[in-house]
Image (tube, rainbow, N blue to C red; front, side, top):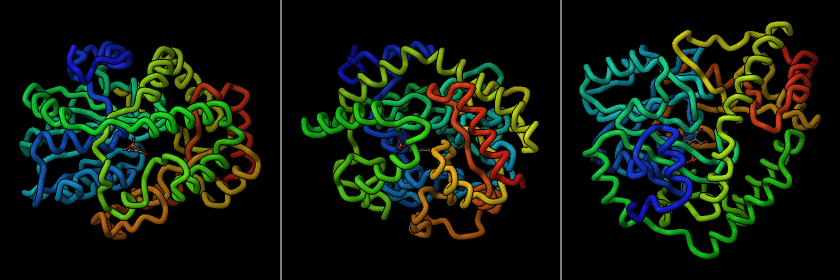
Length: 386
Ligand SMILES: Cc1ncc(COP(=O)(O)O)c(C=O)c1O
């Protein structure tokens, strides 16, 4: 075993994807895994990279930190994944890679993407930050592109507190990533302690009734530098933090290993709750998710379109009902100066419409069937379908 994969979690991840331990790398965050992959394939100044216009701003920040520019592809309004039309529109001869995001856990049609990318001669990178266990035609998302990255953030498919994973599917790229990983920063002792504490506090306090209010408080504390947040102020302003290229902390590996041990149960649970939402949403007059027959999705958050999103989210917060919002603007979170990342209003109309309309429902283990019914009852009482 090499230095970077001598830990308890890597073999479990490798086994899940039927890969070698040496194909898996652990990072401080998902975005850092993306950065490593982009750097390994030689993305740099003057290059362009296509990504979804319905994403977290930390996705375009990775190519930006390498001097490249992101071009945004609009989404398909049913799958929330990039559309072929959006892809064509975003393409220029400077595009050197495409990042395909399996939004909410909905597998992208990989046949279409692979054919398109082959034709253009560019590599595909999969953003699996929402998708762990989703499949396209029986094949696991994350195993199609030259590499894929995953997030272990609190609310992601399985949590490592914060954290990121890179899976490399190409031998040449692997050698480059190994070379880069040799110089990665390690979390300090203080960071190790803080992240371990945060994980314990999160596990003790967060439940479906408290999650929204605690998330608000956590964002405030991290903006003030009192908690290790998902994104620093520098990053949100488009600046690369000095200690960006960092590996995962031991406490995160511990947490991830524990959560991975339950992954089959978690996947089965998400499917049960998704089935419940499908039935109950239709009964309540909302549009259930339309899933492609070739996709076997593990839905992380179940998207529903409503006419009154902002008011609804406020009401859910007051009533302690776990309803979320990804994404409020094309480059989440709200308040991001999107122009700094090359996004201007009107670039991706379907994504912008989804930002105005879509709320999402939880499917994790703390949502049992009665809590899921409570979520639907809340929608029935307070939301209007679009
Ligand atoms: C689709 C998507 N990609 C990438 C990321 C970035 O992941 P991380 O916060 O682990 O860097 C996120 C985080 O919210 C995300 O939602």
